[in-house]
Length: 353
Image (cartoon, rainbow, N blue to C red):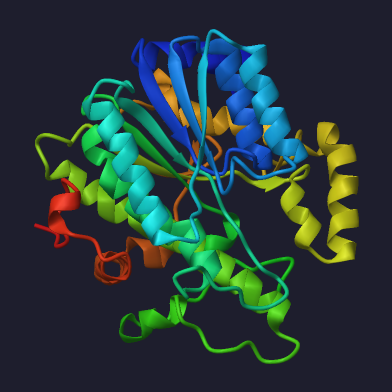
C-alpha cells in the first residue's frame, strides 16, 4: 500500500513522540533527501539527525547544499547535519557515543526511529575501508550494526523503531537481471571472506560487485531477525521493533550512475514511463514513493509493533537463509567480533538467551 504524502506524513505525527529524534544515515542520498524533505515539511516537533561522510567538505556538493537549503526552508524543524564516515568503525563508535550523551543530558529528545539508509557499492573492483575491510559490507551493514546496538538505550522504549534497507537482490534464490551473480553467503566457517575477500578474477568485477552488494543487504535482513529475537526477550526494550524494507527499483536514483551505460539508459526510459508502469507493478518506484514507504514504517501508527521484511509497505517473505536461526546467529557473532563490540556498550547480549 502506498500512502499519499500528506496522509502518510501527517499520520506519522500520532506515532512519533511530540518531541523525538529521527536519525537517517546517508542523508544526501537520493532516497534520503526525499525522506528528509517530507519529514521537514510536516514535523515541526521532530529533531532530524542526518548523517553524511563529510559535512564540512569544501566546496560543498549540490546534494549537501540542497540539504542545507531544506534546513533554511523549514526553520521551525530542527535538522542537524552530522559527519560520520561509515568506512571507519572508530568514527561510528564516537558518533554513537556523542548522540547517546546528548540524549542522556536531554540535549536531544529520545530517538523514535533510526533509518539505516546509507550504502555504497563498487562495480569496478574491490574497495576497502579505513579499517581494511571490504567497503560495501562495512558501510551497508557492519557500521549500521554497531550504530543501532550502541543507540538502543537512547531510543524510546515504547515506540522506538529501526528500519534497515533491504533489496530484491538480498535473496540468493532470486535472479538478478543486471548481473550473472547474486547474493551468496560463504559458509559459517568462512564468513571472514565477507570483510576480507580475495581479489576478483579479471572480468568479474561488475558481477562480484553486485554479489557483495546483495550479501550486505542479506546481512541487514538477518540482523533484523536476530535483533528482533533479542528485543522480544528483553522486558525493558521489547516494544522496540525492527523492519527491513526493499525500496524497489528506484528509477530516479543517482546510484545508477555506477551502472553500465545500457542500464543507465534503461532506467532513464523507466523513469519516463513510470506513471504508466506503476499501474502494473510496484517493483519500480520513484525516490518520493519509497521515501513515503520508509517513513510509514518508521513513524506511522499503522506500523506500530510491526516487525519483519517489507516490499515498500507490503509484508514480504525474506530470503529463506535469513530465516535460518543458526546462520543468523553465526552472522551476528561474526559482526559482533568485527566491530569489537563490548557487552557494556549495548543493552542486547551477544548470545541469544
